[in-house]
Structure formats: structure tokens, C-alpha cells
Length: 470
Image 1 (spheres, rainbow, N blue to C red):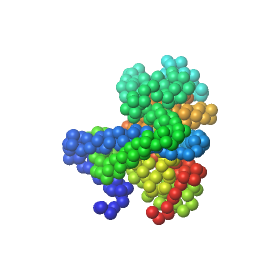
Image 2 (image 1 turned 45 degrees about the vertical axis):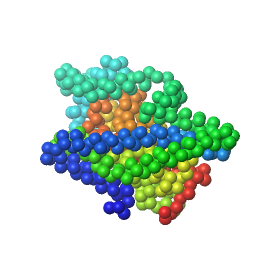
Image 3 (image 1 turned 90 degrees about the horizontal axis):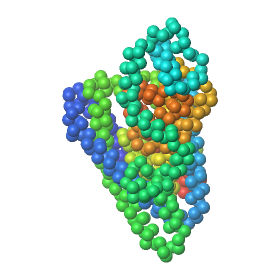
Image 4 (image 1 turned 60 degrees about the vertical axis):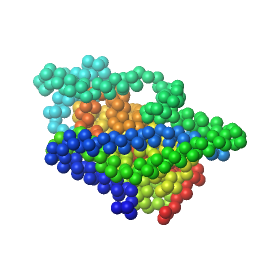
């Protein structure tokens, strides 16, 4: 086992965690799993999160402070944001293409979809939302008996219970200024920002500003300050090394705990993985296309000697960790280590590009949002025009910038995307049952995209030292 590569150890831990979840649900040991195994998964997430923020802070400062040409920073920043926006738009477009071709929402029997459509029309009437297609089924008396008041009330109560908190968050965001995201980047109190994992952009802003000032000042005045940040950065990198030695066990505990909380019987576990059938398959198809075709193609176009298998071998520890944690932020320290040591991207690039990517690059989340919106529209017999679908592309791309790098944050942003095309935001309750599994997969897409973009930026900046046989 000692000679086994880390990514294989993580895979073994992940598989054993799933097997244990099935076994514990069969033997009635779920309570034991939640009490005595799941806490280690929580400890793992906390270890990674407390390392992530200071690592971002110190690595960006030390990386920028060592730049001799400050103009290079602006050039690299423009390339980074440009590449992240480009890959996000491509991801959303792929999602829309897949869901329009496969039409998973139309797999549901027509009677159910008619009921859904009438329910949508009643909601639109109450909310004053204009219906832009011509399927006004509620005007036909023949369909009036499909939806009783009791059914409406029960559906409304069920959806409100699970979605109320997210609705409040989305409403607050909707009422904000279009430039609020710029305001949110600038910290009021850096101590508070560093203590909050949700304010990573503020930490990045401070670190870039501080690093630029260090680079501008004469070397004799800031030499000791640079040594402090470089040394502290090395300490946090060593912390990552130590934590990752125990990652296989932690991943086992994390997977076992997550699944045991979601289901109490083997049948329920199977239901979770089966999920919402066609919708889940379409989302997974899009995510797998991004992981196994789109990103490797980009990486190989930049690094000619890089083979398909080498690409995954070199970043797989970050990918498996992203799958088990569902958090780009928690995976960030490992992503940085993989990209630096296994692909050969310089620390100047990783310390700048990857933290930004973990915050603003949500390709997997954007792709899922596009598919989810069209699926929910199909489920309610709502035909979205080309203009509305282009609105989804724009809204999903911009919403991904504000999507926190934490589990299931995409659900909150999905509410905003639904509202942008006049659909009922409470529909997110429909896809709740399978969101946790899909969230794990889309986080892998986000992390793989971060690694790929950092490689491209490094190549264009002559900061890539790829070793074919390390």
C-alpha cells in the first residue's frame, strides 16, 4: 500500500465509503456511521478549509511580490478572466445543446405535464409574470379538473418548506445593483474577510494589492517581509502534504457519512443514485464531456507531449477530492499542489490563477443550471424561445461568478436563473433529491477547469516546466 499512488488510495477510500454506506444501511448501523465515522469527514473538510484561506493569502502575496515585471500581472489577469468566461460560456452552450436534443422533461407522462402546466399558469397569474408562449391550457375547461385546490396547496407547502431559505437569499441578490459584485470584492475589514470562507474574493483583492505594493517598493525595505510571506507559505504547503497522507481514510469517512445521512435503507440508497433518471443522465453526460473530452483536448493542445492518461494521472488527486468534498475551495490546496508538482506550472501562476478560479470559475455549475432550467420548463410544458435561452447563457455565466465555492451553492444561483426567464423559482424542490450527487460531479468539472486554465496561462506566460517522465 505504501507504494500505491495517492489517487489510487483515494479511489479505494471512496469506494469503501460507498460500500460501507450500503452495508450500514442493511445492518441498521446508520446511527453508528453518523456518530463515529462521519465526524472524521467533517474534520477533513475543516482542515482543508482552514488551510485554504491563509494559503491563498500568502501564496498570492509571495507570488506577486517576486514578479519583476508588474505589467505581467495585468496581462495575466486579463487572460485568466477571459479564459474562465470563455470556458463557462462553452459549458452553458453544451448544456443547452444536450437538453434541447434529448428533452428529458418530456419523458414524464403527458397527464402529469399538463397538471404542471396549469399549476405554472396559476402561479404566473398570481405573480404577474407574463407567459410568452401560446399554451394557455388553463383557459380550456376540459383541463380544469386536473388540478384541485388541495393538490395546489400540498405542492405549494412542500416546495415552500424546502426552498424558503434559498428564496430569501436569491431575492436579496436580485434586488442588488448590477455592480454589487464589484463592491463585494473590496473588503471593509480584512480580518473579518480572512475569517470567512465565503469572502474569498475579498482576500484575493487584498493579497493582490498587498503583493503589488511589495513588488513596487525597493528590495532593501521589504526584504524581511518577503521572507516572512515566502516562509509562511511553505508552512501551509507542508500542512497540505501532511493532511493528504490521511486523505484516503478521511474520504472513506466523508462518503460513508454523506450517504448515511441521505438514506436509511439500501432501497433509498439505490433511489439516490438512480435519481431523476433522464435529467440526471443528461447532466452527467454534459459534465463527463467537459471532464473527459473538452479539458483534456485543451490541455493537450497546449502541452504536446501530454497524453490523455497522463493528464488524469497528474490531476486525479484533486479530482477525487473535489468529488468527495463537493467544494472547490476545500480542494484548492490540493489543486495547487497537483498543478505545480505534477504538471510543472510555476507558483507565480498557480498562486494567482487557481484561487480566482476556485471563486469565479464554475463551469460545471453553469452547465447544470442550463440543463436544469430547460428540464424544468419541459416538465411544465413551457417552450422557451431562443432569446430566453440566450438569457440563460448570460445569466448562468454571470451567476457563476457569484456562486460560492461550497457544496450546493449552485442551487441558490439556479433560483436567479429561473427568475430571469419567468419560471417559478420554487421548482428547485423538484431536483433536490439528486442534487447532492450531481453537485459532487460538477465540482470535479470546476476543479478540472481551474487546472486546465492555469496550464494554458502558464504556457502563454512561459511559466510552464512540464516534465514528461517525472
